[in-house]
Image (cartoon, rainbow, N blue to C red):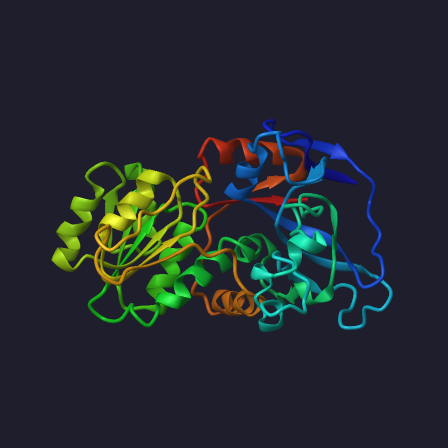
Length: 346
């Protein structure tokens, strides 16, 4: 079968012929109907060779949707032909966090060498993929695989990031979204659907800001050296109630910390270069500001996101690619030349 694989750090992925996998005991084989490309993939592709954390070659794709093609022995909770989405942050299933459905924070994953698909385990950028346990599959019914697959990360991650701030985002408050790409444009829609807050979107070009308004932003601000001042022209001296940074480089984190108001939330979602950090201290930001750096989301939250999609609350912008030209999707991702999310359809 064909698969898009990372072969060596610092190089673009390659379309390769690999063996079709067979499910072992407790596993499920999916015929992939859609796979999403993500900035996390680009981050991994550019990690240095020294201490690279995953075995290579690695089939990419931690966003996957497919149809159950074959069941491993002992699997009785699924039937072949069922359309499903893959819950990506796999865990042990029994630790304190996994028992609460938060496999994204599994205490034992590193020790047991459990890795998400595309981020250690073979991923969805292929004609078929193995899912390690049926609990990591969520039926999607008649949802469109192409617009559904980004929701497994680009929908789940912002939803998980926003939920803790919902009690604060009442009438008269302001939410700021930094970065209006794959995750950010979904965050804007979630904030508009789940809260009465005024939503301010930041990005680096007028075209991206126009896109932010199309998906629901009330106000837009160019992400530059004057961003904090321009946000505060809108919010007044109270500042923003919640700021969600989907970029994660030092300048955007500094903008988030400068725009947030007293008792507000700053949530850093974007990976950036992996080195940036928020400066926190008694005089470093307004009083009682909470700073979080969440990761992905829970299986139950994925179900909630899919329900929002069924209700028509989410309209994910996608660009589709065939598997044969899937490497070009990663080129466009690296060049920041995508409107919304790249989806590869085998």
